[in-house]
Amino acid sequence: MKKKALHIIEILKQQYPNALCALHYEKDYELMIAVRLSAQCTDARVNMITPALFAAYPTLEDMANAKIEDVENYVRTCGFFRQKAKDIVLACQMLLTEYNGKVPDTMEALLRLPGVGRKTANLLLGDLYAVPGSVVCDTHCIRISNRLGIASGKEPEKVEQQLRKILPPEESSDFCHRIVLFGRDTCTARNPKCGNCPLRMHCKEFVP
Image 1 (cartoon, one colour):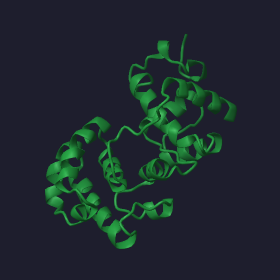
Image 2 (image 1 turned 120 degrees about the horizontal axis):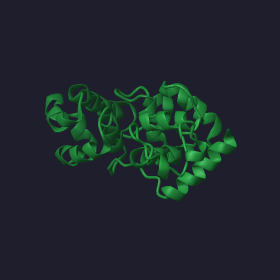
Image 3 (image 1 turned 135 degrees about the horizontal axis):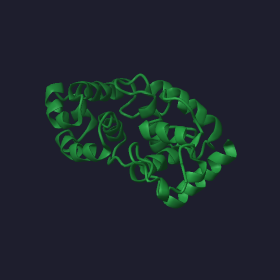
């Protein structure tokens, strides 16, 4: 299984040499906010929302002191906006009061932040701190890992644990970014482009 995973990684590297997060940010807490907004929302939509939000609240202190109902107006179009706005303000307050204004660099600390689950925490650990073994289990990762036979099941944490066992720790974060790109342009949920798929030799669902 590890050998299969390595082959998949090499093919994805050729297809997507730049494994970058699609969300736009400049500061560590801005990535935390953008990832929270991306739940049940496209990265493209989030990238349309965040410039105005970050301009209105240019510092962590500004965001922490913002009125939740005002933040709601900026994030209204990305779904579940009330809960997201609340989580953003409360998480920024916690960064100031408990983490010296910095996004923490451990899973345990990140999971204490309002609105931060394992998926968000793994992305922050991988992108901000290059922590080996950071596996971001979003819908693309779960769907494609199942199709490729390198994981099974739909529960994010269980898929994450399966992938941790077979992915080289230093490759795991980039692998997840590449899987997202692959899931958007080739291995889509509906009508995947199987005929042009560079990973079809590993796919359980490919029919010649």
